[in-house]
Length: 208
View 1: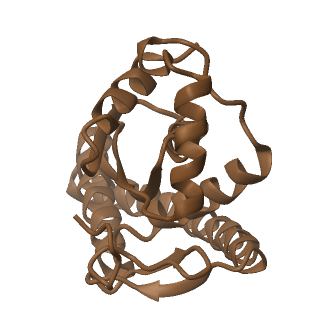
View 2: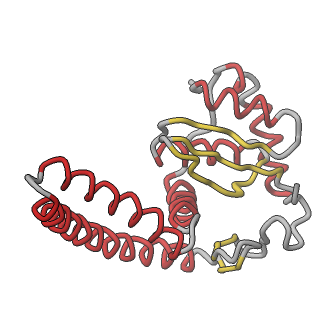
View 3: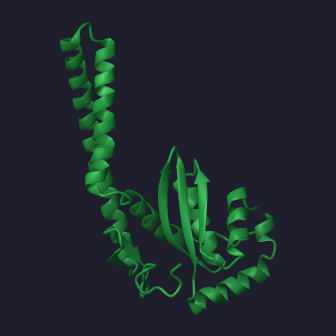
């Protein structure tokens, strides 16, 4: 049975227009399943962005590919009540893995490396100073506490970044093995598109 976000997404897709679905506190598993269901009814995954405070926006566009349209027609006949919470097409693990790889890489490349550093270091520095001044007996001890906390947190973040790079390499290899090719979008971000596919704004016939 379809959840509320799936029902809303399918209803929006009924317009035949590009869809931007706002989802709050959703796991990557849920977001991947939403994109997969959209593919079963004639839409293609376009992008995934974080909006802050646990929010995400999943962007979908109509897929003009004849095979995609044929599959959508078949599924509309087989699952006529999908948008009302009825049965949905079965999940395909291989397709889910491909979607997850694309979506994870899109999220992690939403901001440039420089922007990510600013977004992390500024709050970290301010938080460290606040903590140090709160618990230090004087300014000198407060700065010492702040420095120790800053260094420890920065070391942890470096380890997390290293792990993230390893995961990125694994997802990239997974997409390349499936025939996906890297392209650069209008923001200078590296994205992966299906064999023969293009991003909206780069000659895509369904760019909205």
